[in-house]
Length: 102
Image 1 (cartoon, one colour):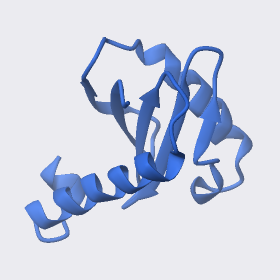
Image 2 (spheres, rainbow, N blue to C red):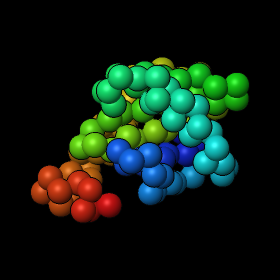
Image 3 (cartoon, helix red, strand yellow):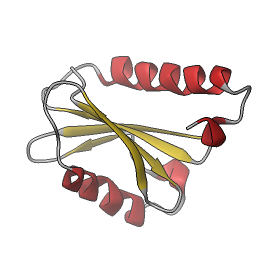
Image 4 (cartoon, rainbow, N blue to C red):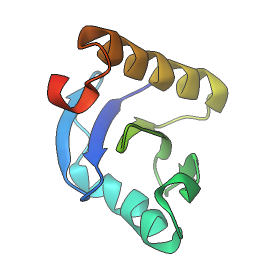
């Protein structure tokens, strides 16, 4: 389902990545960065971004983008819900200080 997960801060730096099935190059995030440039605010980046070989699904919380990379079509709400649970887990880890926790 999810091949890779990238955490991107508000400056556009990928500061954490996790790969499960196969390593996906960071260059796939270029599509995300293009969508981010077109958006007027960080909250306006589309949650689903199709690319030629992948789909990028993202959530924006605590000034951090959590971007999941998938290769096949899956129900996007499953992935988005998973990403929100990941954020909640990090948040519980450090009592709301998410960025310091990571």
